[in-house]
Structures are given as C-alpha cells and as structure tokens.
Length: 309
Image (cartoon, rainbow, N blue to C red):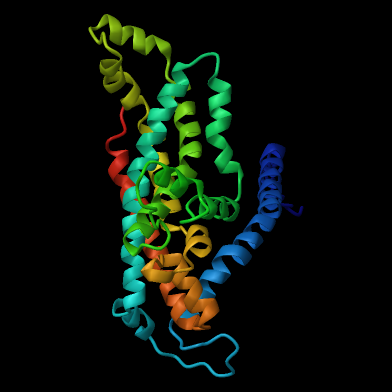
C-alpha cells in the first residue's frame, strides 16, 4: 500500500488579494494623475533653476559660441559691483517704505470700510481697482500725473504758490516717489485680505471683550481684533515684501534706471538682456532669489511665533 502525502494549503483570503490589487491600482492612478503636474513643475521651475545654476558659474554671453567655467567669480564680482550694490540698497529702501505703509495703511482702510454698511461695496471696488490694472499702464498714468510741466500734481503745487517738484528727475526723490506708487499698488489687495480677516472674527468675541471692560474701540482692537488678525497680517507682510523686492515695471517705465534708480530686477534685466552677460545675470538672479527666500522664511518664522488667538 502506497502512502500518498498531500499538502493541504489553507486558502488565501480573497479580501487580501483584492485589497492589494486595489491599492496598486490606486497608486498607479495617482501617479498618472500627478504626472502632468510633475512634468510642468520640472519644465517650468526645476529645469530652469538648474540651467540658471549652470550658467551662473560660466562666462557665457548671449549668442556667444564659446563658454568657459569661472566658478564663483560671478558671485565675487557682484560683491564689488557698484551698480548691483546700488540696486540692492535702492531695493532695500523701496521695501522699507512700501512694506510698513502698504500693510498698516491697508489695515486702517480695511477697518474704516468694514465699519461702513451702506457704501462698503463701493469703497471695496474703488480701492481694489488699481489691482485689476496692469502695472505698466498704471506707471504710465503716474508718469503723466507727475510730469514737471504737464502733470496735474505739479500744476496744483504751482497753483498753491510753490515751485514745481521734480519727482522723476531729482535723484533724492526717485525712490520715495516709486515707493509711493508701490504703496498705492498694494493697498487695495492688502485691504481685501484684511477685510476677509475682519469678517471672519466672531462678533461674540467683541461682546465678551466689552463685558470684560474693553469699553473703547481701541481697547477691543488690541485685545480682540489685532490678535485674531495675526495669520492674515503674517500673510500680508510676506506677500508685500516679495512684491516690493520684485519691483520692475515702475522703474522700467518711469526712470529706466537713470540717475542711480536701478533696483535688483532692473539690474538683472540690464545685465541679461541689454549687456548680454548671461552668466553674470544668472549669478545675480540666484543672489536675488536667495535674498527673497531668506526674507520670506525669516518673516514667516518670526511672525508665526507672534500669531496667537
């Protein structure tokens, strides 16, 4: 009699196989859905940044047939370039004027508009209109308004008995004048952001603060409104800072960089497109991106610690 041995394997639960195939199918579908976004990210951001980094360590000039590796020479050159250093100082001065006034004036306007009932929609549209216009068009309008002989601003100054002011010709007034235009440009957008933050504050908090002794509107602002606007204020400051450091159209239309009014982006434009110094312009671009990135991260970390409810 022959003994026959049979291996009796336990049947595999059908749910395990189905769940495994479902998981693989979900991963495959997820990769397919994200593939276009990944390709766009690589094509629009990653690859240009890599090319920028490659060009920054060369002496490549636009249209040249030869290219030479120069290492960090372009970055060292920037530290001693008077044009770049002047552009950096002008940009810092511009940002130092635009950021505080662009943020806190917008907050003040938002508080006034938020307190109105009948004409709130009108004021929202009126202050937001500059945001909808192109910066080049608005800079052209300001160029006419500030014209020394034809502009209505100097006409009003002359009518008051004063001498015309060279807003766009006096080197000492160029950056403050452009900063004034920059404040006007960001005011409407920042106001809308603050209005959204004010609308989101529960009215019960103001009533509770009033019962706790905060009788005046100023007391309720510092005890309720200002702390609750912390996240909105942080976002507004960061976006306004980035916008201030990116100023270009105003300089290109109003001054074209004359009389020492260059800013960082305009200096990059001159080096890259007017002088065809592609390698040096790439190095300046990386320096500019590093400055903006460090500024944004520093502001976010600093302000995030002060955001509370």
